[in-house]
Length: 408
Image 1: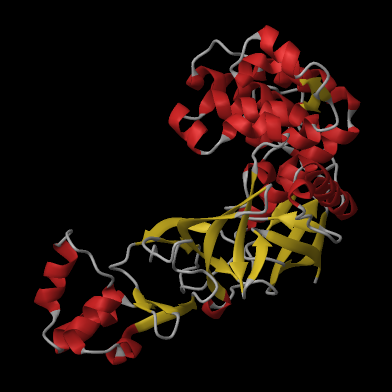
Image 2 (image 1 turned 90 degrees about the horizontal axis):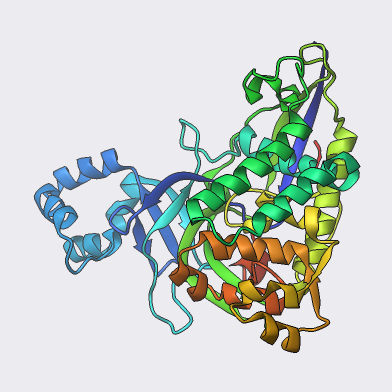
């Protein structure tokens, strides 16, 4: 083995969310509207204080009652008259002045809060697996653009996407199987003479070793509200709240590249990785973000974490964005007749990336969800998905999950 070690840094350019799979309900956090804070209590200390003030019994009734729910802060105020006692059992505090917590009509809509992943000491951090997944996606797209040998597999994916007859689950399996063939061609390059070995053992990505980031501070957290930003520059505020890392936070981590994995060289250098992430960002800007006038400008821009949208996790746009198809040929996707499509859209063309993405939504989403999310207009708007995933911080609108990758 021949390791090359690099000290790396991610600088957040917008709020970043990496969830731990948990959600806080309104009875598990304290909403301090006066000071625009969300207070997360230490439950063990809180119970000690409740016992001291003989509030345990009432608290148990409060927790077991489902009707007329109020948040924990309101309940404490009702019992004690104020929130002064809360400082004795505060675990950490998040500001929410940037997040709401009201909808477009002014109605209070803060309910559940999706929490950020934390280490055993309760400090937020970025898992190495999240960074590695981001780099893997960029490298896959880099190969798609630069490796002509993949064209046949890309054609197979495109043809599989046009399956109108199979059931949604079977459609998903077909698409997943064909896409995995492409990924194996790119990444399963070790021990090719032993094709029956698990892909994990044959993956050249074994040679990219990324550690978890150094711990961050809970004061680096903010509350981010989900905003769907439309082509018409409207902000659709959604009652989805996430603990997120604030913009302008430096995150430090290490990368090690093993250039000799099982006697087969890892095929990428750090220079290749930077080239890949820049290519991915250029493609994303050109074929998606530019449509919303929301390009992510700069060098070494990466897309990290949840809430960034469908585009950041897939290879569809790099694979198909440069190719076009006639809109009239997509009459099944438009739910109109072939003759009507010929008349209405005779010479119009759209990107095959939009075609494939829309078709995946149409074939896999529940019909009600498909129409509620207005995916039926994706083809006519010439973008799919047709909303940009955003949030607000300090009054400014940000694309979700944007960072800058650099050497530390």
